[in-house]
Image (cartoon, rainbow, N blue to C red; front, side):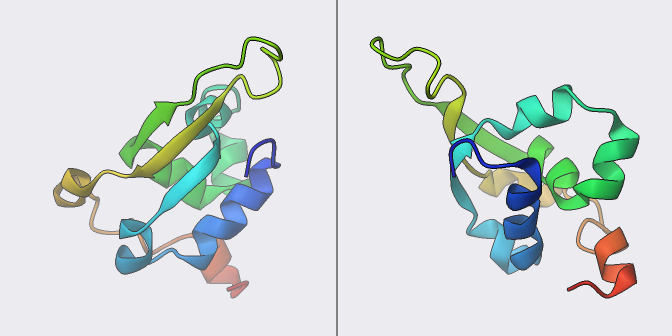
Length: 105
């Protein structure tokens, strides 16, 4: 999913937002931490609550930047849910999300 909008990453996470689903999460796309670092928490909480909660638990491996096109895929990485992070999940990580309260999914 390189160069996708923030909301598309959120849609994927919402679709798998269970302990089992997120445990199998694997993404080739933009480095998601950069989205979190560059936006206000209040905006992230209302627009992308799953992304906001998932990022601290993701392992990320950046892909090499191709020398002929250094800006084309400059923040592309492979990201996945760290298995050892399961013991550190907050009890309510899969509950109390705005989109579930609204009944969107």
